[in-house]
Amino acid sequence: KMRRRGLWAPRAQTSAQTLPFAAGFFGSIISTFPAEYVIDPASLDEFLRVLRPGGRLIIAGLVVQRSGAAWNRGNALIFGSVPTHPVAVQQARLEAAGFATHLVVRDDPPWQVPVIIAEKPL
Image (cartoon, rainbow, N blue to C red):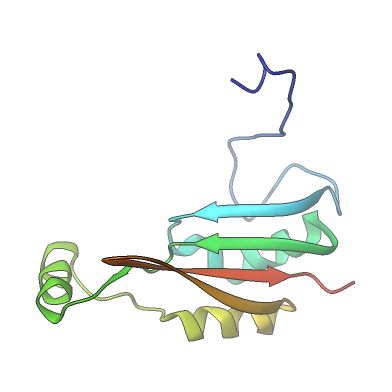
C-alpha cells in the first residue's frame, strides 16, 4: 500500500539487538503488542543508538488489562501467568537505560492498554 502511495519506510527482518541502521537514523520506533525482547537491556541500548536525539520509542500493549477479577483469573489460566513486568517496572528499565518516560493509558472499555512513551535525551 505504501509503495502505491509513493511512500517509503525502512524495514528489515532482524534482531532488535542488532539493527542494521546507522546511529541516529530514526525519529521514532513503534512497538505494538511486543514480546519482552523489547525491554531487554541489549534491545534498549540498540534503540538508543538508532534513535536521533529527542527521538521516541513508543511501546503499546506489553500488558493489556481488562476490568474484572474473573476475567483476569481466566486469562492467567489460559496464558500461564500474569505479566511478569508490571508497567512501573518496564518504565524503570527504560529510565535506567537512559530514556525519559511517561505513560498514557488507552481506555477502550472493557480494555485498558498502557502506552509507554520513552524519549531519548537531546
